[in-house]
Length: 354
Image (cartoon, rainbow, N blue to C red; front, side):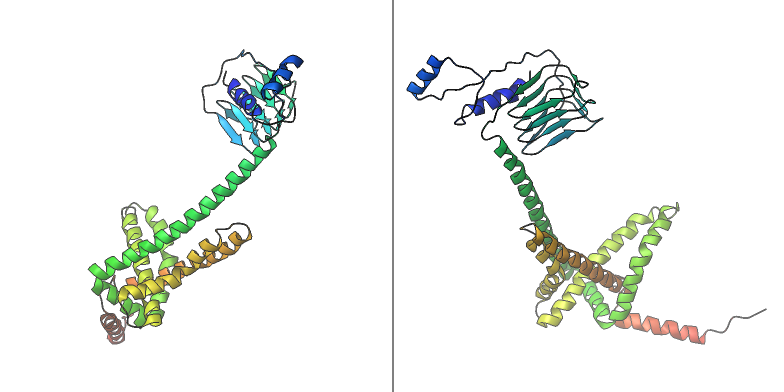
């Protein structure tokens, strides 16, 4: 029986705790002999459980240092084992329900196919609950079991710290990705990159307004494409173009900011400084949040500010990308085309009325 495994492990652990109660009552002569030989004398009833049910072959659910609740209607295909916490069974356990060092509570709606076992704690098994095997309780204060709860606390803390470290690593990797995008643009598309830069720096108001307009119109346009048969094939193309425009525009915005701060240095150094300024709030927020607790909330504020900066900068930069026709036109060509359009509108004859 798989239920014997946690019980056996527990009884083995008990023998290592000084002053612990174990499961075998000894004769006084045997205890005296053990004391003479330096062995620890153990006292208490030994519990041997004989299985009278069929085990579930499914996955066990085991927790250490925290409570475990099997809700009503929930099914655990294997054993439900809780060490250093309280186990509450309201649903179905196809194996054994084992609680070590805590309180075992079996509700009237519970179905336990095999044994209900509690070691080193208390048990409350409802008479209406269905228990296919034995109901076993080994009472007594077993040193060390209560301390198992700290394992759960430390486990949660380690898990939270790991998540925060992962978030910081993701931000650093994203920063590196943006630097890679900048390197590719400046190495393979320097002319197009320069034209987008020219539009954003030379005509910032129109670039910004166009970017804001695209951010508003694009989701609506995608919805209309999705409901029309003709527009569906265009959705991947539009999304890809928007993603490219976002990253190119963000890098161009970083280059302009970096150029204003460090002057006419190498273009990659300008971009690096600009990205540090634009992305610094998010990076700083992840670093501040590492200790957890109140610092995590403060770091969350910086992370939120960083997201707002990214949305604003990439939106404005996207406007410059579209304004320059993805770097195909210089600013002078764009202005000349705009002036020609104005002149055509002025010189065109008025429409005839009937």
